[in-house]
Length: 233
Image 1 (cartoon, rainbow, N blue to C red):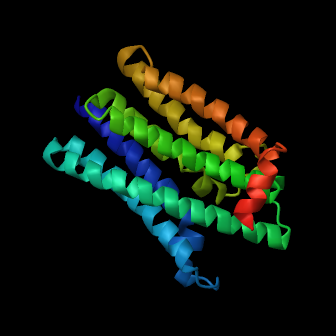
Image 2 (image 1 turned 120 degrees about the vertical axis):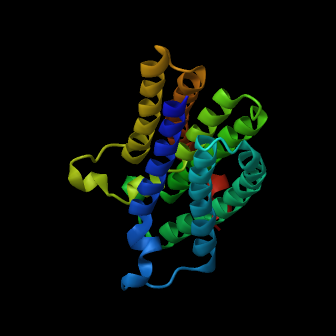
């Protein structure tokens, strides 16, 4: 049991390290660079997403210390924070897509409308996993894995800041695929401990891979284009 608790704490710390390393140049250590100041919207977005990662680490540490009396009340704060993240995330993504539209920039070759679909799809995936985790909050084995998947869902933007495409890894969805390696690590740990992979990782992993391709397809569809233009404009 202690080893399992340690694993989730180590995973949470890994998430925190990835987020910090990815966003250090443009957010956490921005004041040390010559980059212009961020907008209020960007600051709010960065603050709530940082708070989520810190809360995730804190929750894993509380479970490790068997302080469920504190873990549960903080879970309520986490649910409220998740709602704030969706609002801040949508506002930030729409603003970035509008800027790409104005400047003609194509991130990873994606038109702004497709970029918007991919990013909004990421937020939808996060929201779905958090909602399921709340629903299964009385089933610890399911709840903690769903929260793990929810946090993995929002790591691709941090990994994208490593610019893996400049190191021979210029393939579609590379940031998302690298983030999903953390799910593979969690599933491998399950198998090493119990000689089976928990159903949350199996079905959650399948859903994440399917949704990764689906949101790209949605972003390229004719039906999405007027919706994207309405959001961007």
